[in-house]
Length: 244
Ligand code: GLN
Image 1: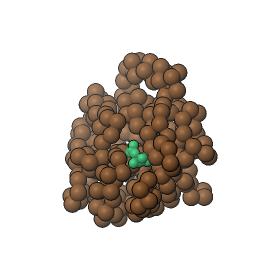
Image 2 (image 1 turned 60 degrees about the vertical axis):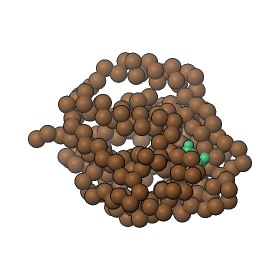
Image 3 (image 1 turned 30 degrees about the vertical axis):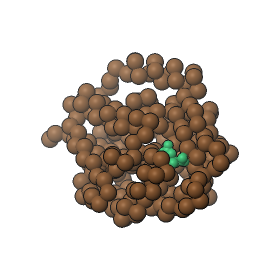
């Protein structure tokens, strides 16, 4: 049986900022190096994936303008995406994508974009932007792990009571520059402000998501062959020293 990772990239033409496409390249290469096949399909406005055909959904960041363009269409896709997440599929959403999966995003111009409500959180734009390198500590992989990234957002995201952030901010602003939380986790769905791109920089996290996605299709106990990550690890350590 040929093992394959099936990725649905949502709005690849509209949501791609700070080289977020690098996350897809990292997933692809780490599969190829292990002899794992990759199906990668993009879905933009008006295109509906067969949700259960995919194990990894990716929604990246964008400016308010692009967020406005995808917002209504994403509402249409919301039920399918939720069904996939409830079944255990992996969803990685970055910055603008993360905001639109919450309850709403009130942008800097005062307009409100309705969210999908997959994440119990809402976002309100502040007067200034949260910009710079970020380091967070997460335990989502089962043990404490520092992630390095870069953030640039006006939105401040507030998680509803009882919701779990992806990690705690060590350096940078995170969700709202106040409560020390960064991102959100719901089942295998993750929202985060970390561009970076995140996945090439943080390979243990990448492999964790990869394993979860493969287990969604093939059941528990997926073993990923080890890779020589010495260069990636040296880059991550350097980034951590520089604050992300
Ligand atoms: N437009 C959103 C904000 O400024 C998201 C930006 C982004 O995705 N980098 O908060």
